[in-house]
Length: 266
Image (cartoon, rainbow, N blue to C red; front, side):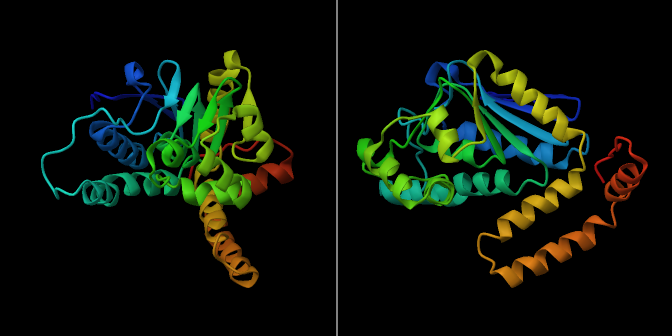
């Protein structure tokens, strides 16, 4: 399938999705939201894809919503209603779709990441950023709006309420190295090494036990609301499923035989 606002390349089990509107710092418009939803549906359904790498073309990962894009002509006339309905219809489902994808998702953040671009990056399982990258919550201080695309959910859980509130109210730039120190992202690397490191990690995960990774993601997500006893139960039920898979059986055999496991993804 041909896309207008992104590119998709698949190799060695890794689907690389590149936001491709570099002239506007890969800002998000209706077409890009639609195509991101479509491409994540496609990689979810493709058994040959066992990991996803998401990045941006040019000098930015994503500058957030494209505020210069012409408004749609349909739907409610009230601008707040239009925005809320658009979020319910396409934006929020996209964030949930990425976060719940039963395959590892890595975000390689290059350059500026602002507004909803931060939420898009944080919807990935692992975020690697170039040291020159910055994360900016432009919503409140510049626009007088609420952080969206999951930012109000991710930020306090990753960096704590005090830092999340400070970032949201001041709009200060958060350098990638500080973001890594605070636990917002996995790591910050030299700019020249970003894609090599991200590709290496994606390839490694693509050769791993895909079903097991999906169960890990599910368990970690459940831990956000579970008490200890509920989470212990979730872990047991996850193991019930894992031990029925080829990959867990292969992993146990390989461990006992002191050799490298060969996983099939099932």
